[in-house]
Picture (cartoon, rainbow, N blue to C red):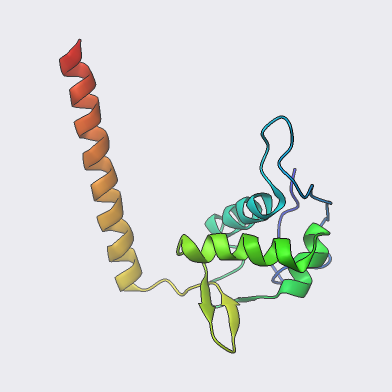
Amino acid sequence: MIPRMSSTTVGATDAPTRRLSNDMARDGTASTPESIAQALREDLLDGVPSPGSRLTEEALCARFMSGRHSVRAGLQILVSEGLLEHRRNEGILVPEVTEERIDEMCSYRAILELGALRRRLAIRADR
C-alpha cells in the first residue's frame, strides 16, 4: 500500500512513507514512477491536495522514499494526463477547477459513453 497524502500539507513529509521498487517487478506490478503517479492520482481524485496547491519534489521524495528522477517521472505522467500543470518558474501545481475544465471533462465523458454504448450494441448484435 502506498502512503496517502496528508490533507494539511502538500507532499507531506509527516505522511507514512514506503520505499518503492525501482524496476518492474516479476509479478508485473508498476514501476516506481507509475506507483508514484497512481498514489498521487488517487490523492487528487480524493481532493487532496486542493486545487491551486503546489507539489514539491523534496516533500514527495521524502514521502515515497524515492529519488528525484522517479518523482519527476511520476509527476510528468500526471501532467501528460492533465491532472497536474507544470508552470515555468512555479513548478507543478494542482489545476483549479474551472467551468472550462468541467465542460472539457463532460465532453470526454460523453465521447467515452457513446463509444461504450456502440461497443455494447455491437456485441449484442453479434449474438
